[in-house]
Length: 87
Image (spheres, rainbow, N blue to C red):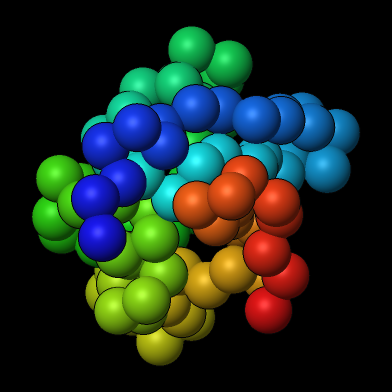
């Protein structure tokens, strides 16, 4: 599945500290977009050149016992037809 065309920020809620992005957005782009708003992901793996959907599907994680994998309940994602997917 090619996700290159699904890289948009759909919503950002700074109060809830929650974002909604399309599945093809690279973690690098997510990080850069968050940084411009003074925000950051609480947990990030070593490799940021993967899509957010790839990070979720492989449960990418940082180090430490308190840092769990990136999961859709922490970061809503969109499927190819653009509806929000809740897992």
